[in-house]
Length: 253
Image 1 (tube, rainbow, N blue to C red):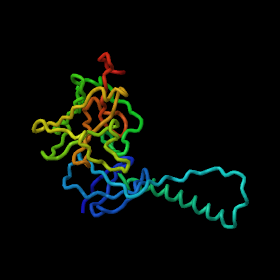
Image 2: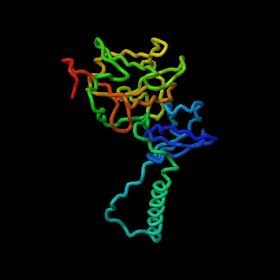
Image 3: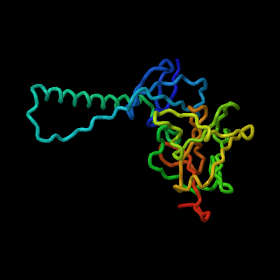
């Protein structure tokens, strides 16, 4: 038996488990989503991060409500309330104490993948000129050309493996169930032995000056962003930033 890591499909938290748990249902320690553990990967390459699938509706922590005027509590209700508070505190303490064995926090420079909405609010790009040596795309003659070269990301993929572009411009290829779905309109074309491209109209991206995106292989393997990429986001999760020139051709600050 061996250990491997996979990503929660809701919040992107990296979770480590033993291969013997493949196919079982676990609870994400961050968002409390029930997750079906994926099959252990055939490769040990840490660049490939598998994504689990949701196994039920997301459970939200209870929010205390200040009661209004009400009838006196029934006999024994204070015992049940005290027991509930005690159990809740014990559960929180257990997660805190054993967090190192339950899951492994994403180290600096890696990405915790979230297939539902990996970014939330747009995060700030890494310092530097966002158009200089931008990784993963180019803007050319009224088009945004997404470019994926496996060698530039330090990975090697099969020639027939499908590669998609996922970002907050296409809801990260999510269909509201936490699962990545095929999208022919966002599948890249293999234009050379080690190069994939996808051409999109620049006008389709003018709703905002910056977007975030990643490449996903086989609809379940998110490609990690190299630490040398000048257009990687500064916070977590780590994605690539697509900067859209304004109508004068300038780059937004």
